[in-house]
Image (cartoon, rainbow, N blue to C red):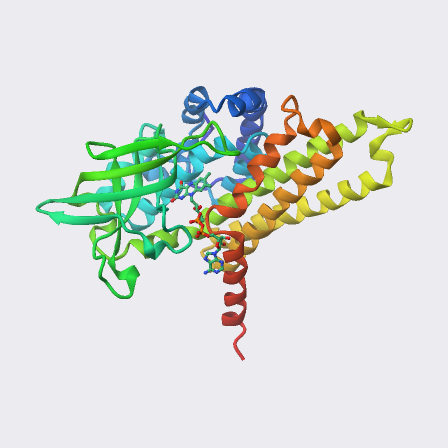
Length: 390
Ligand SMILES: Cc1cc2nc3c(=O)[nH]c(=O)nc-3n(C[C@H](O)[C@H](O)[C@H](O)COP(=O)(O)OP(=O)(O)OC[C@H]3O[C@@H](n4cnc5c(N)ncnc54)[C@H](O)[C@@H]3O)c2cc1C
């Protein structure tokens, strides 16, 4: 278990101890199993048990609800460390904590008391149910509908690409409570949806990367959820609830991108010293040095952008543009470094005996999830204009 300070304030020393604990765990438990579990697409149940012990499922949940109460800055460093060895397990607590953050930010006091302590221990693990077959970026186009029926709602529809939905106990589910509403977002609501009759995990999806973690298609067939599971207790606020979590979500994904980049760089630096061509280690060839230099500079820049966005988030400053920049740059850096490392590894990069091919497969997802990188640049540009009106 991570040592938790007696106050809710984590000192620099507490943070350093915590990050050392995570480092040791990553080296002991995460890195050694990554290749096998990724290749066999096997869920790491034992890691989940260890994450519970470490308190990771409650990392950003407030201590009053049983969590560690970490800042976004400290949490982002944890995510980067895990992702630098294997990105997939970070999704097991990442998506879960985005759900928890939405409950803590938007839920009623009764909802916070009912769900957050169970989420903090990892007894109830969850994720986010936003995307549908016809609606990802354009979330307001979703078709899943919840109709009021006495003291329940009855939900029908389908979701796709929902992470943690096979092994988790529930999700935060975005629906339409008024499909005819204009503007469309006024008819959207969110439910804390625990598994039960009518909540059907239809299919575990087969993926290029981000394997071992469960991402599924879900069907809701007359799924009845008590009315007091409506997040915040008020219809029509689901879209705001969903987008309100995006800043933290983007910082999380940016931290994963920085982790992938750092991990790929580390492997490349090592391999470039081991591999010899023309009588010398390839790190002594200028073509390889140019790659390593570029990768290293981008990794540092990515980590600094993540840190700066997380710090802005922690101090309560507006940080949509900052989180967007961090997400965009750090995840593109993840892809860049994974690709450059592939080139440095030469033919061996293509062997599943080496780890680098997994980084290459995992990296691209970070450019798509939590708002595509096309959308990030559009958000950055809109913010630039808004903040610099003439
Ligand atoms: C492995 C994996 C795990 C996931 N986990 C989850 C999860 O746990 N929960 C969840 O809800 N979702 C999840 N998703 C879904 C993910 O969030 C969506 O895939 C993502 O939001 C993009 O939506 P889409 O795939 O429908 O693409 P689309 O929205 O169809 O976009 C296609 C392309 O068009 C571009 N585009 C769209 N609209 C515009 C515009 N207005 N201007 C410019 N360009 C535009 C996009 O940038 C993209 O390049 C996951 C996806 C994957 C692959």
